[in-house]
Length: 231
Image (cartoon, rainbow, N blue to C red; front, side, top):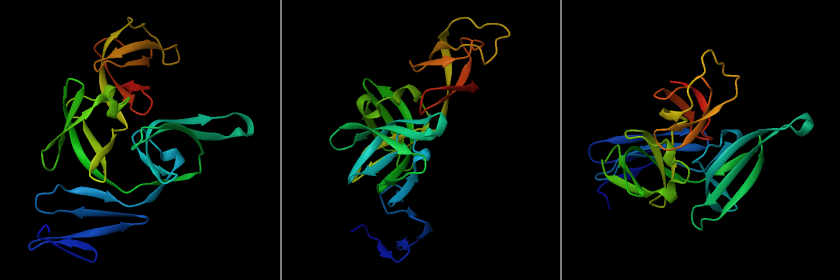
């Protein structure tokens, strides 16, 4: 009903043909229809537990969950290591914690992933622009749960859609933010010295080495909010 016909291995219209590329368990299609944005459509595939990041979508017990927290836990002796994750049901809002072995694999649901740009905050809402259609999408702070502190205008993100509605946002692995308040830096301090709290331009607080000063920019891990390096 969109003026295009579908052929095996490609989406076509009167002028163009867009092939599909089979990459193992996932099929990635470059799909373009009149009036619709380009999207990356990902079929069911499994992800290794150690690759799970905040914002990922997982399928457990025939339900779709969004990852809120993800930690790689190291245990001494024969305990080895494991992944501890906190997840939220996208339909009911129920939260639960899961412990996964590092070699476990978890199903990822079928999703549409759209490249978007964070534009601005409007009250309790955060506005994003679709990079293909330039349409705006407004998401509230509750939806972004724990991720708003990494948003600066023009940040490139990926927003996940399931059955036509937004269900999660994937941030870059790291972001660069400016320090707006912290104790004065200590001359000749090393990274091994005890850390100190620093308030960043987005309102979040991060533990930083003592040599970091107000006005400096630092690289922060968006999974756990940890300091990585000066930028």
